[in-house]
Amino acid sequence: MPTYRYPLLYGDTNLQDVFTYLTVSFEALFVLEGIKPGIRISVPEHRLYDVKAFCQAHGLVMDVSEFKVVNSITGDKQFANLGYRIRADSSIKGDVFAYLSLHADWVRAAKEADAGNDHRMFGIELGYPSCCVSFYERHAREEMKKENDYILPLLRNSASFFFENNIIPRYFDIGVLSHFPCSFGCKESRDMARQLLAIVARYSEGLASYVAGILRIPVVMTEHDGAHLLHHSQADGYTMSYGGVQSTVANRLHYDLERQKSIPLNNPNLILFS
Ligand SMILES: [Zn+2]
Image (cartoon, rainbow, N blue to C red):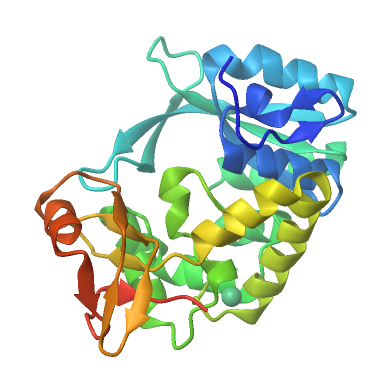
């Protein structure tokens, strides 16, 4: 098993050993803590056994979807935002959705809403702020056709940029929010994110401050040329200098940013969080 700089220990178990991803491990922690009524996570078929065993040992009710999801990875973000649903008994390999909760009723309702593609019902089951559920619904059709990452409508809708609402590092498996906020300034989402970060801090202060640190990093966000985190940045007058670039894709823009080591603060693709 890999070693982790910041293991997320629940009892004797590092949740990352069971749930593979940090963001999914957080979700599992939030449902165990009762802060989220339930969660839907994507589990590769070969990991199902371990996830099931963990749930049984910790009083979580779990059910899996009647369909599998085969993910399509977008060119510039190397990230599966778009999935195709196929029958669960298909021999094509995919991920299943697992619904986890402390309550069997929740699992049943969530699975039903999801099977019926009822975004609103499903978002509400998951405890997402209603402003964000409406936002998601409003843009679902247009974004399905594209890369399904909602970042552009989210940017258009934003006047302030709270770091707690920064969902861009999810491309790198870092973050506590699992929904698209209706704007980076959404107060309901920020309250939720703060609460979630506080829970993580109770288990590992190091991990919580590491995550918060990443969420504060300025980002160059484009529609088709990837997302780029500018590490060790410092603003100075009209420009910002930085030490390194972490990108979703090694493209021209990535190398340009690496070489330049600075960017005008008024670059329209630059997002600064506070
Ligand atoms: Zn909102």
